[in-house]
Amino acid sequence: MDRPRILVIGAGLAGLTAARYLADAGQDVVIIEKSRAPGGRISTRRSDGGEFDHGAQYMTSRTPELNAVVNRLAQSGILAPWRPGGKDSSRPWWVGQPGMSALGKALAEGLDIRLRNRVVTIATTDGGYRVEVETAEEETYSISAKRIVVAIPASQAHALLSPLDPSFSKITDVEMAPCWCAMIAFNAKLDPIPDLIRGGPSDILSFISRNSSKPGRTGETFVLHASPEWSRTHLEDEKPSVTEEMLRAMQAMIGDAFKLPQPVHVSVHRWRYAQTQTPLGVPFIANADSSLLACGDWCIGARIEAAHQSGLAAARHITSV
Image (cartoon, rainbow, N blue to C red; front, side, top):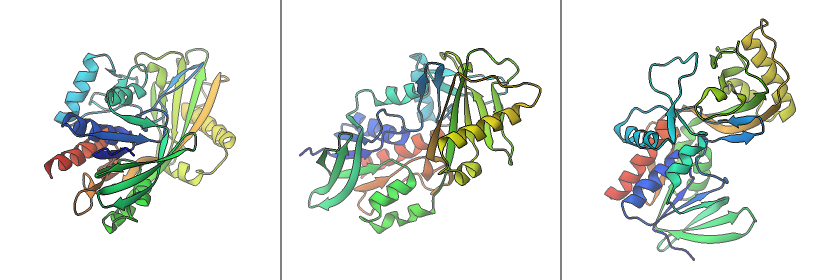
């Protein structure tokens, strides 16, 4: 049975940030991640029509710690500025190259990550905790840790941690919104369409993004995110009906002056926990002896950088106790 000192559950930005800080501080760290790649919602899908950043579209940076990460990755070509037509902020927008997933891969480099592994249960032991893990092949194994950092969506974190300690019951105060995402490719550039269109309060779509306007991309690709309200109402709808509704909504937002041609690729993805609407209000949450911690953007807010701040705060707390 493995006995790492610290186990991090989740390889999104919060988990990767915590693990990197702890590993650099000399701690033994293992990350368990149920997906096939690190990065969480900082993700990219590829198709014959081009690439799609179907999760986070870009990142901003407001803290010295994240600025240092951004500068380092920009110098190495992993991050690049994105200046789409219709950009509605003076703050720099950064994107990964050749996709947003490049950010997660860069931050994961050199860390001990077990991908396509899912934590089933956590149990207390005399020396800490025993975690039962299931692999993609449906095999199970145990891994022990003195501390555990849970860096997954709030409801999932609550399900794992609340049976162990009542301190984590307050996670139920967090509200996260779902999001349906559509990925659409065309065989020629659609010049009349701006690179970025924001939806209004009553619109089905919260925005339309020309993904191919980002540096290092190919094809003529668009990413559509449905609004939180529409996504919540249609969360369990079948993919064909969601696709049809989102394509109609795209045409409505573009207007009747330009008729969308037939796409060469269309797919949709459902993010159950896409955006923090009501955060916890603290950088992380821990039990009394700081042997169990939970972190994520849901602790602070909806931006990518909130996940970085939360993971860093949790890791710094561990090294201080």
